[in-house]
Amino acid sequence: MPPANTPLYDHPLPDIEAWLMGLGGDRDPQNISEWSFSEPDWTAKLWLEVDSIVVRYVSHDSKVVQRSFKYSLSRSDLEKVIFSGP
Image (tube, rainbow, N blue to C red; front, top):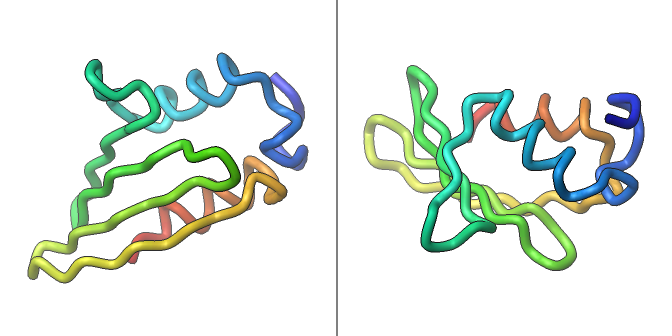
């Protein structure tokens, strides 16, 4: 896998999938670009879109927040912003 400070667009898809699995993601068998994550304070759906990663968070009080992150961000930066939650 490329270094964590490498932009995600320079990662092969199998490495991105391994990274998401390593972070506890569950891939949807019906939609392979959709991943689910669960943290103590929120759950999230993540989609690997053509030009960005889209994350929809749902907090325990049912507040929904959607964010989009470009693949030009590094893997380490994406991990920080995605898992900081809504």
